[in-house]
Length: 123
Image (cartoon, rainbow, N blue to C red):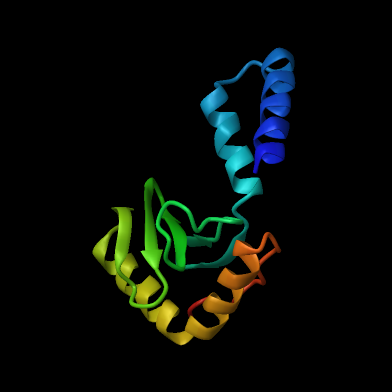
């Protein structure tokens, strides 16, 4: 993890010297390099961080819908962090139930630093 942080700081420094835009915007883009999108449906983006088992310590996904974000547990669809609209949360929970085995397999890949696979959207 130290190498990743070190590389991130180098890139941030170069970008900050080269471009003029808020570092928080850059941090969002750097973050998304380590959190690939695994599915998208009905305006909902589903992502999974690499090596993201420290903070929540449970298999989970990150979801985004418009300006709302949440962290949702894979086993039971519980919101661990964030705020997400009810209708979209129900869609995500249905999608989790359908793809639970694939999500858990992706979790194992991501925790070990490998790229998770794309998963079919809710249809």
